[in-house]
Image (cartoon, rainbow, N blue to C red; front, side, top):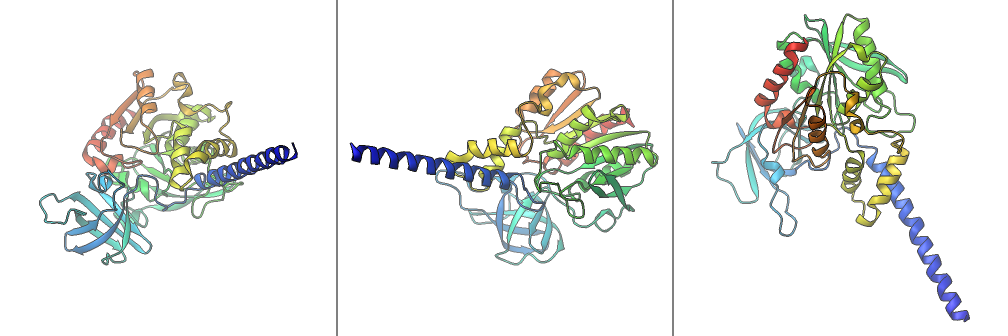
Amino acid sequence: MRTATATAAAVTTSLLGAGVAAVAAGRYAAGAALRPEPGHPLPGSPRLSVHSADAGRVVLTLPRPPAGGAPGLGALRPGTYGLDAPGVHAVVGSVLPDAEHDPDTVVRRLLAVTHGSLHPGTRVTLTPQVHLGNPRTALGLEHADVDVPGELGALPAWFVPGARDTWVITVHGLGSGREHPMVVMPFLHRHRLPVLDLAYRGDLGAPASPDGLGHLGESEWRDLDAAIRYALRYGARRVILHGWSTGATMALRAAERSALAGRISGLVLDSPVLDWHATLRALAAARHTPGPVLPLAVRAAESRAGLRADHRPPLADPGALRVPVLVFHGPDDTLAPWEPSLRLAAARPDLVTLHTVREAGHGAMWNADQAGYEEALRRFLTPLM
């Protein structure tokens, strides 16, 4: 009897220990998922190494595929991307299919090396961030460095002036900073639209979030609300919100909750995070969270980020939409599933236009199809200008 009792106690202790360890691991993974640092590769970002680079082309070695998998399909995506590494940034264009190369490499057009050098062996990440610097140094666009008064302190922003009194406020998303929205600045500038490109809590130069965590737009939207207030104070009559990833979530939240929502004339949502659960799971998995712990990590992250059951996800009430919405999304986004975007467009065909972009990763809809993206944007913005 004593032996059986001792054995049962030992098993119970082991189970409790395993449970405590699993909870601790879940909380650790949750914290990692809620701290996606700008410049840190997101899930689905192809990680490559430079084989060689010369005038007009770069040869990239593909990562070793998993057993039975295809080698580095992400590196074959169409379009224009940045190549990032510590101290290195370059811009690459389309794949050169006729160029001779080994089976484990891909050859892409090399458009520019904007920082550092592409030495053989340099490990790089293919990223949607094409430009480095600021609007003047990267694009030749005159701009002002401004501070937007936010509830936590001053929020740095770039203001690119334009002749119209409708401003576009751009908001980056996960894993990027305010350099990412520069991809659309030349287009917006050609159409004489002023642009306010915002850095928000947790960004470089902006106040930290009080708990040091990201909240997938659930608290960050208030910084966007401050940017709307700033724009109206300095000459805008109306604003259009253009957000990527969690920046798109922030735009939806601002349109729903802001006291100034009546001055928002439209929303542009690129790769919107509309399913918290799926995105948190992908972020936790990308931090090498063991499969058995993933559900705990997701629940812990939702709790820590304040994404409780009584906080509706942005898609919960399509009937709350009051302004036209253009959504850029596609089926190859592994971080923010596009099915919620499909449902949003189906629920509100009177207001929501979905522009599907295939073979595009998260936040990379413009990169994969610049011409199609900008034409859809032109059609959407013309009646709102």
